[in-house]
Length: 239
Image 1 (cartoon, rainbow, N blue to C red):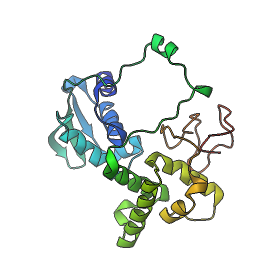
Image 2 (image 1 turned 135 degrees about the vertical axis):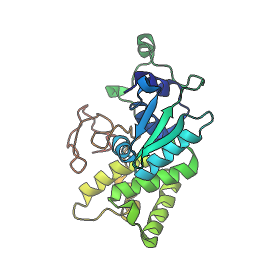
Image 3 (image 1 turned 90 degrees about the vertical axis):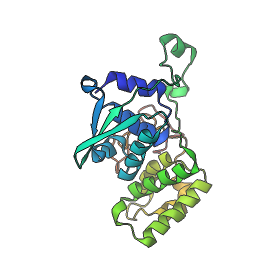
C-alpha cells in the first residue's frame, strides 16, 4: 500500500467513474520502495473494484493511454501478471481534502448521508458500463455470450440509456427484482420490462456490493436488510 499514491489519485487524478475506481485500486498496491512499481493481477482488481474483467482491462489501458500517462507498462515476468510503473505527473488539483473548518461550513443533508452517482465518461462508456453491469446482475458469463444473448443485452442497454439509468442503479434493481419475483430468472428483458417497479428510489452511492448504498449496513447480496440503520422510511433503494 502507498499512502502517497492514494493521496495523489484522490487529489490529482483526472479520471472519473470506473477508470477512477481502477486507478485507486492500483494506487493501493504501489510499492514506493522499488520506484513506484506495481504488479497487477486483473482478476484481483475485478474483485476489489466490483467490476468485470473487461472493464478493469479497459481502465488499465486508459491509464496507460492518458496524456500525460498515469501508468507506464513494464516487461512482464509472468503472463498472468501485468507490471506497471505508477506515475506522478504534474497536474492541477481536482480535489482538496476537506478540513474541519470546511466540514463545519458544509453541513450534511438530513440523516448525515449524501447520495451521489459516480461520473461516466460519455455515452459510449456509459453503454459499456451498463452492458457490464447487466452481465454481472444477471449472473452471466461474459465469455459465453451468444449472438442472441449479446443482442438482448444491447437492446436492454439502449432502453436503459434512453431512460437515463446509471450503471450504479443496476445492482439495487436486481436486488429488488429478486425480492418481488423470487422464483424468476434475472434477465436483461425482465429488468427493463419491470424497471418502473424495480428501479432505486433515489441516487445510489456505490460503496460495495455487500453494503446498503445509503446507510452502509452490511448484507448478503441476495438477502438485503429489512430495515435501514439510519431509519429511512422513504428514499431507501432497498425498501
